[in-house]
Length: 94
Image 1 (cartoon, rainbow, N blue to C red):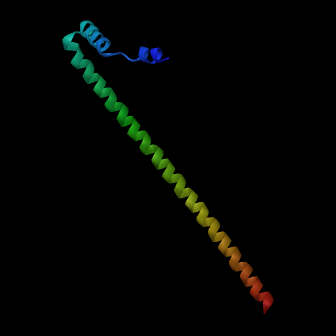
Image 2: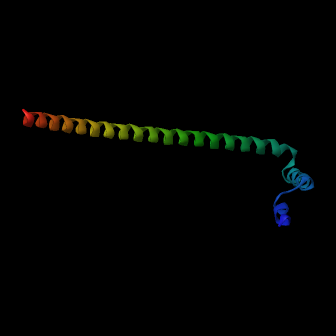
Image 3: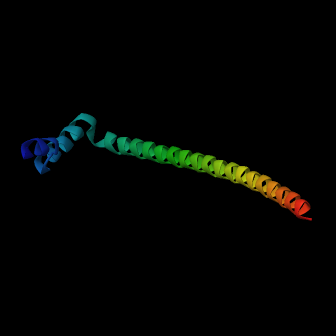
């Protein structure tokens, strides 16, 4: 069982071999360009994630405001009905 877990994770020597192969394939001059491109991609991803989170938060805030308005309208309606019933009750007891 532990054999399969260890199989998926490269050790120190495997990482060195992978880095050596990357250096051979791309050369010393291309690696900084690749890293810059990777950094730009990560920055764009984080920007998009942040804007999506902002939009979701705004949507949730709008829903809460709508729900509060509906609850306030219901409360006003219930209070009006209560006052009406109390007025009717007072009229019947007199």
